[in-house]
Image (cartoon, rainbow, N blue to C red; front, side, top):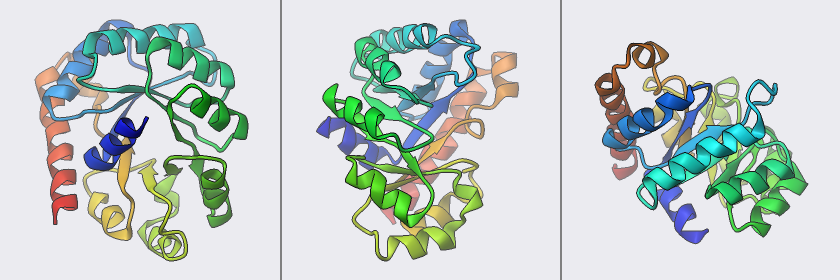
Length: 219
């Protein structure tokens, strides 16, 4: 678990994969990897359109394909059962859109990194008290960088990830405000490029994000 925590801290980026067809997953993930991405989140389907078992199967396939090259985690994790499925599939981290004590507890019991979401200072501190390794600020664009800077004053001990609407235009603002990394989905996985099968274009876009982020945290 510590190794994954350190990797999240050093890479500063988790790419969110949502609603991608099974046959596109590995080519997409390889395109991300070629662009410098080293952490992928595969989301569960909250509306049930894709079964939890199917999502776990996709996580397993990616874990088997990449091994230690690129840790795979799960997103939109709302239940303890989803944590169990992820652990059984080889996933390494659990990301949620909320703070659920039972999910955090199960995540640690399975030896995985816990990343629940929070919004207010009270929620952020509560998530951390419950055992969050990182706290996901979501949706971060509704908060803004000035909010993050203010919150980081009294809560500087809590590592925060910015998620929801993050793109190349606002990465620098959030980094300067004090987040330790980002979760980025649709803005880095361009659906138009994916539909065309333009994996080279996807790799190029991923590399722009990775390079920009690395530069921000090396300054």
